[in-house]
Amino acid sequence: MCIDLVLHKSLSINDLGRAARRKQLTINNLQLSFIKSIFFLALLAIVCDSIGMIKTTLLTAGNAKITKGEAFGYITKGIHLAPANLSGYEVCRWRSKGCTMACLNTAGRGQMDSVQTSRINKTKLFFEERFDFLAKLSKEITSSIKSATKKGMQAVFRPNLTSDIAWESIINEDGVTIFEKHSSTQFYDYTKSFKRMKAFLDGELPSNYHLTFSCSETNSKVAKLVLELGGNVAVVFRDQLPSTWNGFDVINGDESDLRFLDKQGVVVGLIEKGLAKKDETGFVQEGINS
Ligand code: SF4
Image 1 (tube, helix red, strand yellow):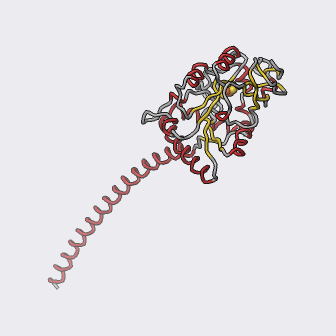
Image 2 (tube, helix red, strand yellow):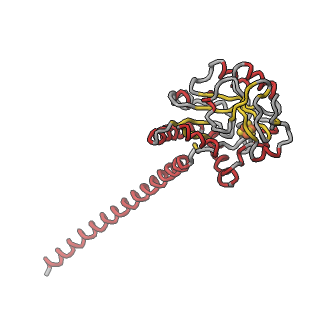
Image 3 (cartoon, rainbow, N blue to C red):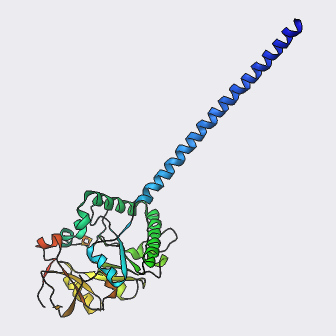
């Protein structure tokens, strides 16, 4: 009887010890789970943040005229930023009142609110997360080249579909431009900057970046100078294309958007579209020979 009691007491003390250890283990496990949860949530926040940027597609296929290039074996992709200062950031330093009103930003898919919001967000990302923007852009360029190659086509790029940014001055975190990063890829744009156009004509821009000067109601004298220097000038005409403008041949710029294939020293004639039909600033030129 006495032995039983001693044994019983001894077992109880052991049981209490085990229970205390189990309790301690449970507390430790709870603390560990709590730390794991905090770590997981922090990681999730970082991943979600980066996924948010990755989800934004920077390159788009552009408008109907741009897709005409496919008949010639080229797929053009470009960046639609929010033009002028719609995003709070100015992306068209050399714009005129007429071009701002006639801008193709609201043509086609641009009429949709979601598209406008996306362009504004993209523009903010360009200014506020520059290196991330350029890293993402570079990935998309590489992937577009691969996809075009599979179709037996060549991918070419227009960084300024609805902007006039001096991309030759925009460097990534390795200190190189998109033209240097993708040195065997063709890029092209229109610009209203004489400085940029002159640099192009003087061979100071990367050899894989082609520029066409864009005429407005405020820069026609400069446009003539560009033509005299051997550059090309895009001019918007009303109703019909003349065969000459200020003594220079006019080619039909609406046949495709592949400006880097144009011969030099010509006027790239474009017929007014969208809001340009209502232009009264002089941005749209009369389609008569001059
Ligand atoms: S410069 Fe070009 S993109 Fe900018 S507002 Fe004028 S037409 Fe639009």
